[in-house]
Image 1 (cartoon, rainbow, N blue to C red):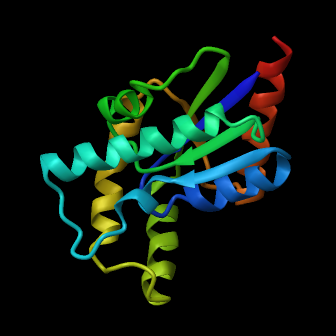
Image 2 (cartoon, rainbow, N blue to C red):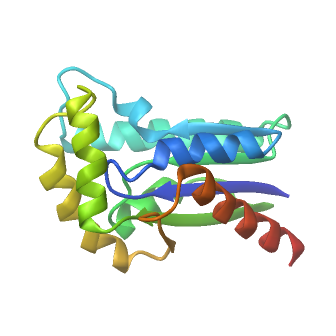
Length: 171
C-alpha cells in the first residue's frame, strides 16, 4: 500500500530536516517541500497565486503517488489551517493510499531559538520569529497527529513518524 505523509508545522520547527531524515529511513520514498512550488521573487500572495501553488502541489503529489518506483511520498509545508490541509488532499486519488497527517511543534522559547540561529546564519528574515510564533496555536485545531519536537532531534522525530508508519502498516 502506498503512503502519503504530510508534515506541517510553523516555520523553523524542522519540517524539512525531519522529512529528509524520514526519507533516509525509508527506501522507495520521495520528499517534496511545498515551498518549492512557491519559490518566487517577489513572493506574492494573491488568490491566483495560492490556487496555482495548490494545483502544482497536488499535481506533483499525484504524479509521485501514481509512480510505481515510490512506496512513500513525504510532503512538508506550513499547513496551519485545516482548509490548507484539506486543499492539499482534495483532488488526489487516494485509493490504496494510507495518509498520515502530522503537525510538528515546539515550545515558543525553543522555536524562537531555532529561528534566531537561522536568522543569524542569513537563512531567514528577522520578521520570521513573530510570524512563526503567531501560527503555533492554530496547529491545535488541525486533524493531524501532534508531535512535540521541543526536546527531540530531527532524527528522533523521524523515528516517531517511522513508528507510526510501522504501526499503521500492521493494522
